[in-house]
Image (cartoon, rainbow, N blue to C red):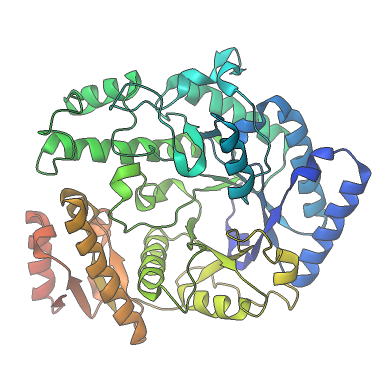
Length: 471
């Protein structure tokens, strides 16, 4: 039976795996894991996220060993009253083109145990070749490569991938008694030209009535005035959201699900086709990863606006909010926890992944993990002012104009937060059940974002006494 009650008091931390853990079943490893579980329990954590085997398909040739490791760690954690979240990417695979790629993977991915196949293109799963599932660029008809992660990507529309991932998940659940799954990296990478595989092209034609033209066609590509191109943007959002819809149906009710997201306002989101608010109905919790380069004392506009947006999504869908903080030192921890409390966010404390010599989680929590339980039901504060932010309008603007629209929202959010006001962000998908009776004011960033139906509702709300503010 599904229960999210444990999330009301969840205090997460990262459980880091490294290359030495591949020595399992060495009994000394079990002792190391047991000591870590005892430490986390003593320090006040009550949930861990298993980190290290992120690009899960990288480990296909040693998958039984990986699952054995995760099984034993999960059992040890449960013995110490620690809930366990299994974290992986279903779509990304490291790809080696040169010796430089090996060095890049080893030096640049602190979250990943540096194990990967020399050439996974020959690998198969259930007699199906993984190479056939790759995303394809409309630019040249070839598989895409994502330089920041040195990887290639699977297309979530490919029917063989969908079938294989379902079997993959079932195999994991049969071996690891986890409490939740964090399925990450559902993106079309690296840009708006992905994915143009046969299945994506057929779906786009079938669902929207448009054929993808050659990339030399300026009337379509990057043309925000063309309804067909805007339909392409919308389709990619929906196709990625459908991954979570399928996964939620495949999972047993007692295994919770969420995805990974670091922003829901950015004007760059149409490029990769992932928008967390459009997936939220399929999640059991809303998750926000605060950029590891950011800190509450800097980048205040971006952090204030994004956590406001994520907390608004969580409250709208009546789901818990989890926030991942990359912490430099134990002295920084109280500041992070104080920052999260007004948003009713459940904390996930991680070491600073940008640093090779980062302080480990056990040391970050050495002074304890003091954080209040979130009362079930209503949030601890009610929104008194709302801001209308339209993703559809943002995506219809040229990139630089879209960035200006986002910046306007960030500035207003930060200003309200600085004045002690916790605003509520009203997204396009929230209008049907909007609750203006709770608001003192609804801020409008740009009147052009209103369609006829929204204009009608605004007029109705104004007659009821709601103030409209123009930013």
